[in-house]
Amino acid sequence: MSFFALKTVAVLSMLFDHVYHLFHLELFDQPLEAFGRWAAESFPGPVGDALSWFAGFLILALPYLGRIAAPIFLFCIANGYRHTRSVKRYAQRIFLFGALAQIPYFLYLKAWEARLGEELYIPLNFMFTLGLGLLSIALYEREKEQNPSLALLAAFLPIAAAEFFRTEGGGMYAMLVPAFYLTMELPLQKRAVIWMLFFPVAQLGYWIWLFQGPITGPPLAETFLYAVGPCLGVAVALFYNGEKGHATKTAQYGVYALYPVHFLVLALLGFPQQVNNLLKVYQQKGGITCAGQPAVSNNLSPAGAGGDDRLPAGGAV
Image (cartoon, rainbow, N blue to C red; front, top):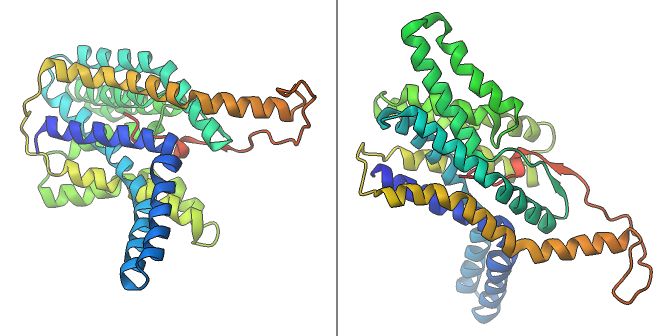
């Protein structure tokens, strides 16, 4: 699989993931549930049961398609360092589009908040994670030649910055960019084993959460989705054949431009729901109803704050 094909898979996964987070009920879950009920009623017996089971399976499986994006983008940054003519311009481009995307990203997450009915922590977007991962490689390579004893420390500084500034995925994801880079020349079998461990280790917090209580229900489902699900993206990256593919400059910059644009479009599509939820909260807190009567407050303000684990990152880029 060429580099361009890999990025295409990652972009499609990212778009699906971000659409899914906002509109999964009306676009996926509700239609599939309706199909499952229709199949069970229309085809009593094994056929109906099988179709109904398959509909339920899709509801559980579809979120995993969005976990493919992040590992591929992290790998692409590591591979891009090896082939870029100018690391400086490469980093500038990533940070520029990260900055352009931050406000649309904020609006998108606010629209998602409205759908969830709870607050989300809003970090710097995934472009900053990728850019800091790239800087980690660049500093490592520079110090490796000039001062080998400081190479690892220099590489750690951008990773620490990703954690300190709370970029999407944080320092653990930023660290995976140099991790991909340093293991890229290993034989395929060794590379596959090491890469498959990257994300289960990076999402250590999920495993701690899982084993703190009964290993059932939401903890088990979310741990597999966010800690094991990205291994699907790693599996795709392992098919990289070293070829660039048929990528034009327009396509290359189009991928960067798509990042802020798609967040803005999705935020606008999700905005009506956000407005409705804000009006409900206002009314419940004693605002004025459309009929001009004082609203009764039920103290239903959004509760709970989702951390980075609730974000689309993933695939985010």
